[in-house]
Length: 214
Image (cartoon, rainbow, N blue to C red; front, side, top):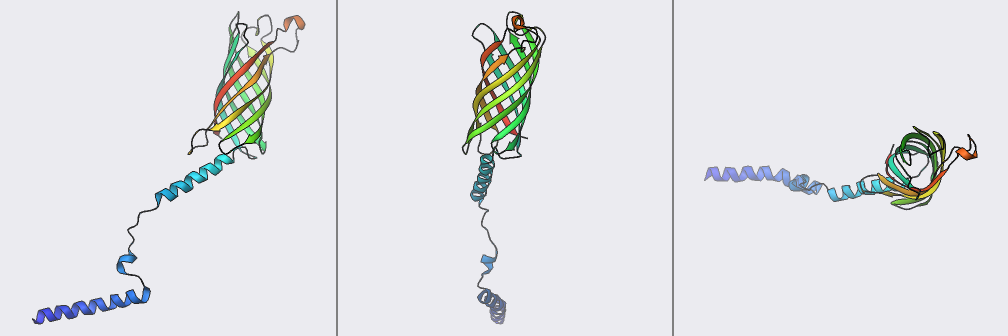
C-alpha cells in the first residue's frame, strides 16, 4: 500500500511541471515532435514552374545555344544534297540570334562527291509562346567539295540561304528544343569562272535538329 501511494505521488510530481510547461507555451509534447512528411507535390510544382520560366526566357539577350541537325535538299532533277551540321548561336538582343555553322555534305549528282561547309547564320524569332517560337532566317556560307558541285561547276562555291522555321520545347523538365524549318538551298560559284561554268543549284532545304542550352 505504501509503495502504491509513493508511486502515485511520484507520478504527480513528475506530471505537474510538464503540465505547467504545456499551459505556459501552449504546445504539447506530441505537438513538439512533427511527424508530417515534406510537401513533395508543392516542391515539384515549384521546380516545374521554375523550369517553365526558364523555357519562357528562351530568346533573351546574352543566352547561348548549340544545335546538331541534318538537312535534305532535293532539286527535283535527280540531284539531292544532304548534310549533318553543328551550330552555335548567341542572342545579341532579345529574339535575335547570330551564329556559326559547320557541315559535312554528301552531294548526290551525276558525279557524286562530298564536301565541308562553314556558314554565318542569323535568326529573328518574331513570335514567342510559352513552349515554342517561330522565326525567319538569313545566312551565307562557303562549301568546298571533292569534285565539282554542281556538275561542270567548281569545287568552291557560295551557299546563301533564306527561310523560316519553328522551335519547340520537348519536355516540361528540360529546355531541349526541336528546331525545324524550310529554307532556300543554293549552291553557285558567283561566276568566278564565267557564266558557262556556274551551273547553280536551287532546291528546297528541309532541316531538323535538337537545340540545347550552351
